[in-house]
Image (cartoon, rainbow over all chains, first blue to last red; front, side, top):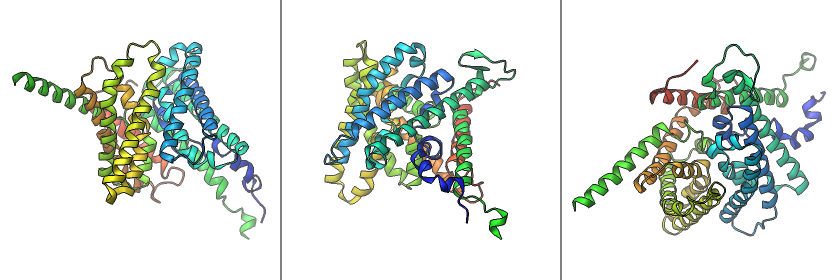
Length: 213
Length: 206
């Protein structure tokens, strides 16, 4: 039986899992709040995406040096404390670069310190791997989050405000309700269904006609 | 005596008002999506939601109580935006450790069930988010601060219960495979969120 594209490149798909097929938001349902509520335009999404990448990547990297002999309960507190320390320069630099957007995203920026990739996935996934493998996996996960939050932000800005990156793009019919949290849930739901459809198609392909014979 | 009764009345009035606001107007899941992944996790793990609610309310109330007395020391700092998360995480961490120790010592019968709930409830966005949001409210009283914390955890538990009611059906074979489970649950939460948005008197601009 001939192998499918997915089966032939399974190792590569597994390594870059967090980018799309095992996406943090769309497949695992984690770190939903900033995507659903605060990503109502491109710039807010960009700010939250950058902050998430910096805070999560640096925190998990530092966390990988913390000895496992410390009880899990204390390690969870230490990881979140490290995230809080990483938050300070991240928020400061973002505030210099995007002063209005940092204020607009409100509590969703500091809340990134308690995101599930740091609190839960660092222990159950990243820290179980060897460092080079962990770094690639972590990079794919944070990039996957960035892609999703930017996509949701762009969709909402285009169809709710008729602009992209603050520039009007001539959309004649806008739906301002897309800026509200309920729309965020629904958009994430449809995007998650799209990812699941592709996952199903790749992992459980329908047999071709000549293979059935 | 009358003074005491008047201040107790004001305390409970604030507590009730902020609780109702946090349960309905500012529901942690339906209005702000805070802790949505924790709610979905609790539903999938089939936690006893009543116990879960009690654990979360205890963690939230104790954290709110400490935060109420710590926040005035920080509120005038020009860099408070940067230090609040670490101070609040420290407070939640202290409550988390105390809760673990008390459960392991005095509630041995329910230890296994409750310990996993404490892990899930302590470090989720709903708890930290509620503390940050309550700190943003100007001149909030102790009753209001506690009420907001209690309301947040009650609202969170109620929202988790509403999700759990539909989760079995939303994961059934009747749903197309692409939408089954997480995607349709998000759409369901979106529709409930829209219903609550309308229920509290908002209109939509199309």
